[in-house]
Amino acid sequence: MTAAHIVASGLGKRYGDQVALDGIDLLEQGGLITLLGPNGAGKSTLLRCLATVVTPDDGSLMVDGLDPRREPERIEIRRRLGYMPQDIGLIAGSRVFDAVEYIAVLKDHREDRRRRRAVSDVLDRVGLRDVAGERVERLSGGMRRRVGVAQALLGSPTLMVLDEPSAGLDPDERMRLREILTERRRSTTVFVSTHMTDEAAISDTVLVIAGGSIRFAGSPGRLAALAAGRTWVQTDLPPPDVRASWRLVDGRHRCLGRPPADAELVEPTLEDGYLLVRTAVSPSA
Ligand code: ADP
Image: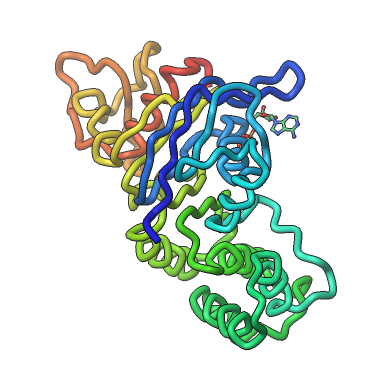
């Protein structure tokens, strides 16, 4: 199976007066796509649309030419999907193995031996083999996230949708997750959300989302390059019209915006580019 082909056009979603998504267009097939944005930007809502658990109010979404608004096509999309929601909702009292096997059953893995083998494989992959018999309520936050990743890996999906998979992971766990995502992106269209800029560095495409819209779409390198010639350090307090600034450990200030003529320009990072995009959206933020 090849990586899922995603086409979205003008996706919109409202909750009462609150606009969660406002005209999202997507065209993706394969690779790791990171949704980066502040809390409330619309990341989860977009991921939930992609996972077919939320129906957009406006626009259209097609996965491999299938329309999730039609039930048989939605079911077919779900067969191709590995989804990890923000709240994994593990059933208290169940064991890690059972929690993952339950998803395997829902995914129609009927043959017992092969199903259990598949569950063992994904638990191995996320490093949870040793706690397979543990009750889920005894797991740390990071382990619970890994159970969610294991569930999403089941059945070699061609579309993976992971909502903040790295939240609460320690550095070793984050490294393991990066390896899994890097490995999967060859054969899978992988969407992940995060609000941590360093997480986006390994992606093929970064989508900066704010106020329900995509404000930037491109490679991490292109996002960093947006801040080229607009990032500098200085000893004096930053000028009032600076777009963003913060104090460095050496006491100087790193500034973003329109540099003064004699500014000491520095190499921009992905975070600098992100902050410029974001402050262009909401100057008060
Ligand atoms: P993010 O994942 O970027 O933090 P969300 O997609 O969760 O953003 O939320 C986008 C906006 O939609 C926010 O203002 C949020 O409060 C609102 N929202 C999301 N889900 C619901 C819901 N089920 N009911 C009401 N408002 C919601």
